[in-house]
Image (tube, rainbow over all chains, first blue to last red; front, side, top):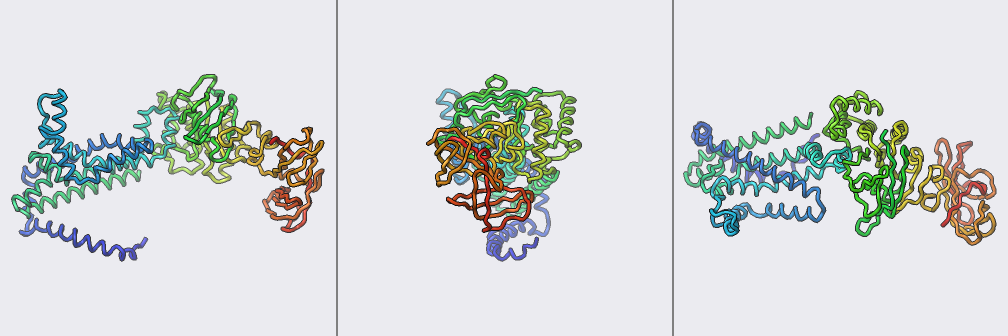
Length: 270
Length: 346
């Protein structure tokens, strides 16, 4: 089907994106090969230190995705299957944080998780612990913050998938003798798999490039690749290396996305 | 066969202000097929959901073979169901769809295989085991749904307008197949539909529902020939319905002034409804209507005519297709005998 006539209306947007986004990004990435060679890439992908950062980034992204799925599926499922009133309440609770700036949410976690933060004060004053729990400026803090920020995406995608499921299919399963547990694992999970998959891909890909949350909640101990890139730009002023790292991040993200597309297409073709 | 008797007593259900079920009582005998016939909003689907366990009644009891099942969840009721949009499991092939109920019951593998094969043969889908629902036609999907519903020897079978989405010929074929299977298995069955032709084809008895209440429950002949009120007379079959008063012995004067010869020993002054079925008219009779053809429809095997007669009476008449189709504005006279009219209380 030929859509050649369709470009006209899109032209202003294409021009805008090219000027504001594509061109600056391309120019920045070109710094990585300024010297005419791939030395910066050799450093980014060769030195143990930087490979470690890349690996940690993927590891954290995977863990965040896992916890988002663990918490997000029940939440999305509940919102999709409950009464109109509670569904609205659920939506507000999930969407309101989404509309709040990431910076504000991250600062809020700093207040909540600090040694003298709200959570530790409650636990100590309530006699549950004697020492404050180390929840901030470390891996735990970053995990809590990132899962919280990315959960709404997972919830919304799960919600969509559960809603699209024909309720008659669930009734049929129940009528045929399936218990709640069996209905969940044999019917709901397989038939919402595309929502699960989409949610995981989105959360994983977003996690890879996360900056604010690991920077603020990590206390310098959790170096994800975006944090490293920012250090190179702002502190070390090594824009060439920063560009190389950015190119690596971009390539990794596109690779994950491409693999996901491929996998999804194979699944739907079978 | 583990077929059961179903007894509904005084079932009531409200949704806020709306009365969905109004004191519904019904007995379906072992091996019988009862059709619950009614327009949308009549409560028939709600009644089905109460029997299946997806809704609980506000009051009343649901007894299967004398045992109250209202507290049982749907999964424990052992009731086979067929849905309008088939509701097959899209991610499972035909064999796994049918085997599902047996797997839920921890049936031994060899037995599952045997029974699924038997069920598929019963619905004439042997060899379709590996297909996925989306690779099947509507009629085939419905047959898989049927196999799935009966493979675990349910006590009851519930069908919720299962043929609505199919074309006419397929619908007729499947109606007869389901009926044959149901009779062969002796399975107690409740069939829900808004299609009165379907109800007449399939049922032992028909329960006509409107506004949450059963208007009449009787054999199909009884429902068609002797409806008890306006609603049933109008809903089932085509009808000419008038209201009037008994003015003398065997005479009814209609509200529009026309007098009719009837067979009745009701006391004068009693208000009655009069039903004249379109196919009961002939060219002469004790009651004669002379009129002008408004519409003449050719239906192949019959003619359907709308006549405007005196006193503002409009009649729907069906004649076997003999000779030429009458023309619009043509004058035509029809007659109907006293014992071809049906009278009902108002």
